[in-house]
Length: 384
Image (tube, rainbow, N blue to C red; front, side, top):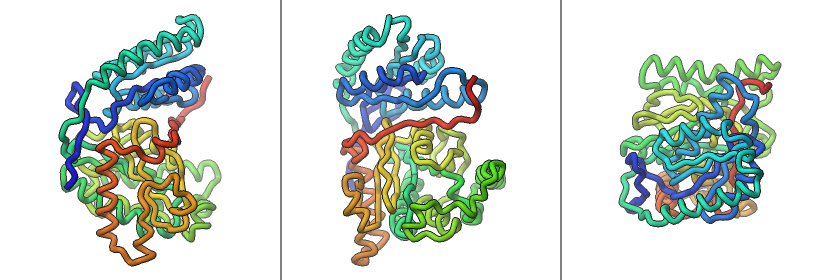
């Protein structure tokens, strides 16, 4: 078995990357955040939209998510930038409270973006020198939180990629690790499969309510998800009903009990398997998984999906031979031999485990190499 290694953070958490992050607390600071991140290796920009004029729970969700990303275990230190310094203060304070080195700078206070860039780059260079002094140390699989995602699904997703990931999910849970799946709307029609695995009656009720919430949101807008899901790319890939799509998606969760339901970007407090309440669109969803502390994300795709997350390496896994050929630059693991040559799902699951281990140990994913990473924080209110 591959020996796992990771960086040790001051609070004892383990990180599989040693990144610097530049978080734009307001969207007016996105351009300078991106320029700063581009100026140094191993520096990533977290640049969601909005950040000003948000109120109440909507603002709290944005702040909590940015704090989760900026204090992620894969991040050594974080620079928060905003139009005015005060707008980034809550994000800065949350990251500092998590024990991550952090500073906040305002464009107005610095006298413009060129001046902020100069001072910010000097600080990032100091942090980078400190980060480079850290060395990887042996780690256990139980140190890690693994996100589970699927997007651009087709028939091979439910036959190959998701079941192979599901075998890994069971191994993770059995070894004392944490696994988090999301996209509750992708469970419509497959509720019974999750209901039977709820750890207790309270969890069972929360799973049902979380899935039903998304159906209610759609119905309130005059949309019947049973008539609009599967999406066009799913249909092109051979999926015919929402139940077929959902049961295929649920395969990636394995067979272990579901210990609880997490809020958007909420971290699990104990090991085990969890459902996270977050919308299905990939960028939005993996932002939530990353903010919840997922060290990496196992992402099954059938017809192809290119997006990843800046702080949580996203491993693209595909069982469709055509996609693995035409979308090769974006596929980390080709499992097409299961359908082409009769390779067993157990062998495919072992391949997923090995691919996961190499990424934990530092191998870059396609998303990291290509820079195909983005953040999008859900909105639950309007700006003023």
